[in-house]
Amino acid sequence: MPIDISILGMVFALILFIIFFSAIILYLAFRIKETFRKETKRGAQVAKIAFLIGILFLAGGSFYFFAETLTPMVSSPPNETGKPQLALSISYPSTVRRNTKITISFTITNPTKYTAHGVVIQTNVLFEYFSIVSSTHDIIGNIIKIGDAPPGTTISSLELTSPERPGDVHDTITLTFQEMSQPLSKEISISVTGGP
Image (cartoon, rainbow, N blue to C red):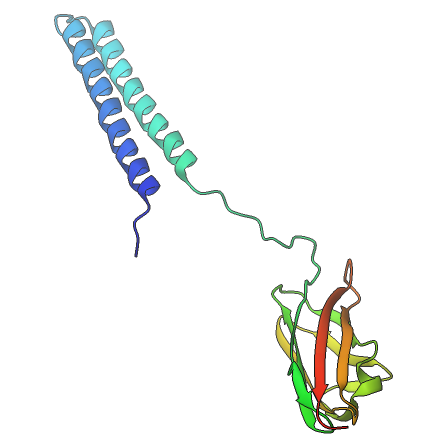
């Protein structure tokens, strides 16, 4: 595990500061003691004790405030709005033979502690070329209805049959949900190969 040089430098600077500040406090304390040593009056003794106690409080207070500046600030969570934020990844074969079964997986990640409602995955032309065999979620037209996406990972899998004709299929997959500020889109491209 590599050691960060800046941390070592900060620790060294802190040690030097403590030694330097302690030396100044001790010097002042001894000088004040020497100044008031020959004084035998009660008022001078009280003044000497009060002054020494004041210097000790000053030293303690400065160390306290110095330690406060070194304490890391509590970082606020990145999502303070109370809204979920989703990420979409798609797993699919880039090349398939004609008239064969393939599986496409949509992985929806919700890193927040909030649940996303009304999550849907919309395709444009994918289901015009590929026939649906089975799905883990309901499909209406070109929309896959996911429903609610709680914190964590939600996976939707499709089993499709590739078209009978070879060619390239390009589509834009869009993820939407009720709390979103803007939809999330991903491009997919599948090349269908095989004989005529």
